[in-house]
Length: 124
Image (cartoon, rainbow, N blue to C red; front, side):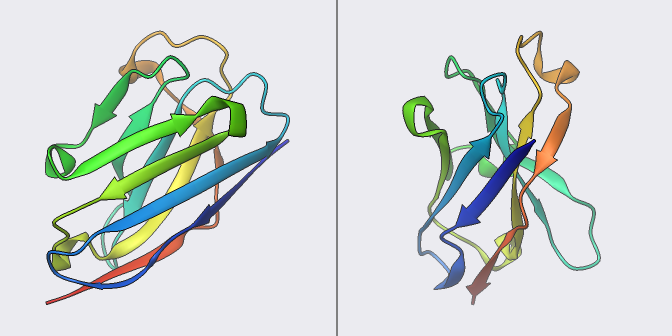
């Protein structure tokens, strides 16, 4: 089993920055893709960004140029640096991971492991 623990959420003013972290533990040796999703009240969960073990990245349009996903494989940790935050970025942010081990394209990724989520609130 895999455990994902997020940290780094909080309250920030519009235009500010936050850095989220997600530490993976357990049976992690097969994980390839790790990603961040978010869910705002009354809305569906949506992909924010994802990264493969080799560093290939995928971003939602709303995150391009503002959000950066990175990963430290040696520490089994993935990060989401968020800048120029907007009130509409307010949501619970979830870390996710696949079962791996092979990446065959973003359309084929299935996330089997999820963290508990961390709240990000952006005030106007």
